[in-house]
Length: 115
Image (spheres, one colour):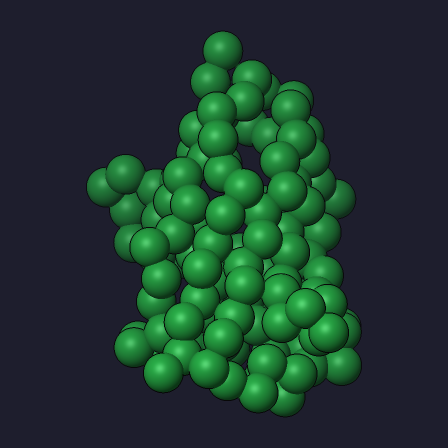
């Protein structure tokens, strides 16, 4: 059974940083492209960043230059380093495979950016 467990969220002021982690189990992690997704209140869940099985990253325009996605296949973990956070980054952040599999959604981790 695949489990994805997100952690690292919290409350920060604008301009602050957080590092999110997503630990995977029950899957051959290294063969999957992985994505970070987020869902802000009242909005649909959206893709934020993707990293291929080979480690090539892609980020959406709204977070380019501020967020970095990385992975450690030895630890079955994907990371999202978030710098220069803005209030509009406030959301619950989730990881999933890319393309996503609905049964893989975890509980997410809440990021709140507010002064």
